[in-house]
Length: 219
Image 1 (cartoon, one colour):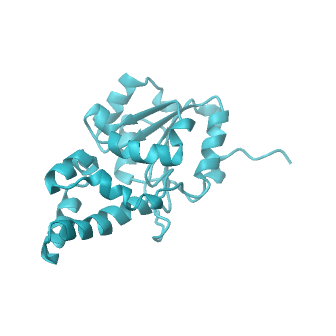
Image 2: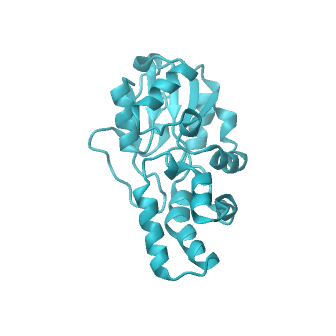
């Protein structure tokens, strides 16, 4: 699927691409709304309102900011995330793919919308940072990956040739932004959340397993 001789730089998303999105889905859609009404002693109408607020913020920098939600909800979001941190884990065969990339001459960059607090929680538990050459968070550059300006900022921070770059992400809006910037090789993820049915992106090729990207072994 990939002609690796045509690639110099590999950009990788974290949540839903390398790590199982189930942790984030469970936290934002179930755990946080439940704990919010419990800790503030509210009724379920407030839970529904919170779910709507979370949904409405999608695609913005605030949506990905733990500091923003801690401030808005008067809760320590990091502490609440630690309550379900046992759900944080790699997607199937993602670790093996990262080990292959680490042994390759390719430049590997984690390009994530997760803020530094999220990274501070997940990286020690997964060791993901050991397999990449650089980590760039949308919080570092002030715009989410859904915006074209993210890639302009990335070019300044970590110069790359879009025509010789591969980007893998589970978010179609993010992939579209990368395509508009000129990144040539783009792949989506069929099943970001291991507990949910997978889906295809009409505009992008999606993969089920990273093994499908690796060069065939001789014989």
